[in-house]
Length: 225
Ligand SMILES: Nc1ncnc2c1ncn2[C@@H]1O[C@H](COP(=O)(O)OP(=O)(O)O)[C@@H](O)[C@H]1O
Ligand SMILES: [Mg+2]
Image (tube, rainbow, N blue to C red; front, side, top):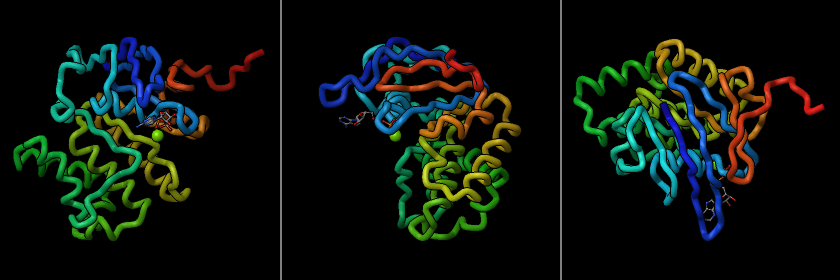
C-alpha cells in the first residue's frame, strides 16, 4: 500500500537515504528504528514530499511523487514531526483543527473527526481551550498526535513520539495508539524510535535504518550465531 522504490535523498552532497526500497502493508504498525542521524526523519519527510528525492513512492496505487506535498495530507496521510511545532498563540483545539482546515474538510467532517480525536485522547478535550504555548512538552506530544489524527485517516507517521516522554505519559501515549488501532483496523502506522526494544511488542514489523539504508530487523530473540 505504501511502497518506496530506490529512493535516494541527498542533503548537502551527502546521500542521506540510499536506494531505499520497501513496501508496507495496509493496516500494519511499523517501527522504524535507527540511531541519531540514521535517516528516520528524512524518510518520513520524504514520504511527505518535503525533500528532493530520486526514485518513486507509491501510496494506495497512486504515484505519490507526482502529488504536490501540500496535497498529500488530503490523501489521508497524517504526520507528527519530531519538533512538534504547535502554534503557541492558538488554542490546543485550534492547533488540532488546523490541518483539517488547510485540507478544506467540511465543517461537519471536521467536527466528526475532532470528536474522534477526543474519544481517543480525552485529555485533549480538557485542554482544548488552553493556549498551545501553555501546555507541557509531553502534553504537546499528545496535541501533535491529535493533529496527525485529524488528517491521517489512512496513514499516520509519528517521528520519535516517545522521545523525552516521562514513563507515565509514554504509557498513556502507547495506550492511546492501541485505542486508535482498535478503533480503525485499516489504519497504517509508522513510528520512529531510537531504542530498538521500545516498540518490539507494539509493532507488527520492525525496520532498521542505518546510515540511510533500510532493512528488516531480525526476529526478536534470534541470535546471530
Ligand atoms: N538539511 C540538511 N543538510 C545536510 N544534512 C542533513 C540535513 N538534515 C539532515 N542531515 C543529515 O542527514 C542524516 C540523517 O538525518 P535525519 O534524517 O534527521 O536522522 P534521524 O532522524 O534518524 O536522526 C544525518 O547525518 C544528518 O546530519
Ligand atoms: Mg529524527
